Length: 325
Ligand code: Q46
Ligand code: ZN
Ligand code: ZN
Image (cartoon, rainbow, N blue to C red):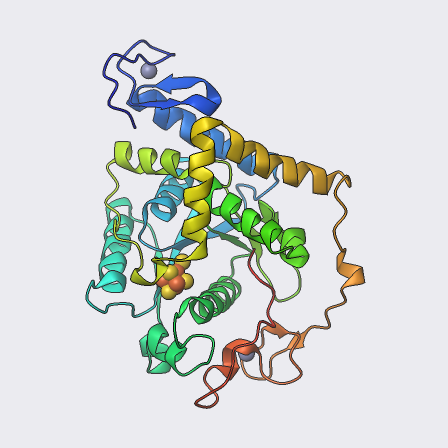
């Protein structure tokens, strides 16, 4: 959004509400909504994410990106239902309960179906409580939280009969993730990072229809559509490496508009065309078998990392499930 009141929409000459330097485009409210919805449809088709015959489960956090994604898919006429996972992060801020309230309100206003998983009701402990029992989660619950979310989202998609799981990762998320992977030479993660991860036995297809929109663009869409979303960040996000990378990349974008999009698309193109060669799946064999407790595929010889979280008091949640990317 911009405070430049004299700027005009390039389609109708009305007052523009946003100027996107990287696209050389300024648009009024109505034309911005139209552009944003059409672009999403273009990305869905370009990356063969899903068709109108498929049911899509949208992972909803109550934040601007995920509610915007659900709103756009609803406007485009897709069969999209929501999934909210209440993590029990309520210390001080009532973050989880407030975001659940906003997700429910959004769904009710549009007559949409929202599925809710409550971690504390399911396991008798909140995510921060579960994390505190593990070595990796003692200081910060994010690794354990990510493991729980990935597991629950995939399981819910399969059990509810959805073969497509949509998340609202935006360009800023993707570029920060890519930057971190390059910085640490995490080739395995670089191989998997993509707008779409095809389904495989035991795993739903994962798609990211907003991967080419900047955070500023998704925020502007939510604002002009009047979507009520949780504005607070999760309290545990503070000081994360992802936020530091985002800050660095935003500074770069200021002096070089379009740098983030070029970095992301350049990587995807170089990898997918074979110019950039990363280890292929066959060279990194992963023997998957169903977890005896939850049935989800795992590389672990016994219970999967998720089920081991609930086994005993001090287990380390090693990463044995396929990362969601
Ligand atoms: S919700 Fe969970 Fe995030 Fe909060 S505890 Fe960390 S991983 S920051 S996306
Ligand atoms: Zn206009
Ligand atoms: Zn399991």
